[in-house]
Length: 167
Image 1 (cartoon, helix red, strand yellow):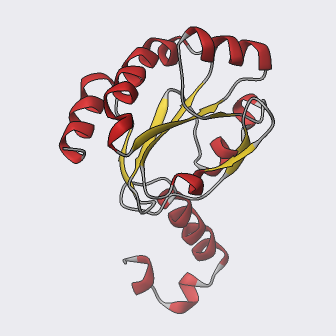
Image 2 (image 1 turned 180 degrees about the horizontal axis):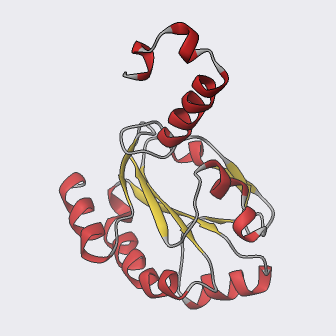
């Protein structure tokens, strides 16, 4: 990398360390990198880890009940889930809700019949902070080995991508 070609005194300086930290942070959640494992509680309080889906294609879907664009995208995610769930694919919802009841009502109303988790901390959601999520909806498509292979797939693009990899 260009950073590694810098002189050691530059790399090890205050600013060099700061830049290295920012470079490393920018790789979190990037296509081609390993997804960072996380664990949060489902609606029943049972913790679920991302790594529990190893061996499957997983769409990690960051959303919230109060997010209009998220709710409008949910029918597309439901369609993808229904079409490909028998082909080694699932969705793992991470909600940025703070109100437990509104979260659960939205899951039911939108028929989100896949694992859902939240720490009910809104924008301070621990998983959102790990992946530096600053707007929703967002998603990550992770392959069976835990590698991020696509980001922010919506509508027809989601279906087309799944069709290509799950044929």
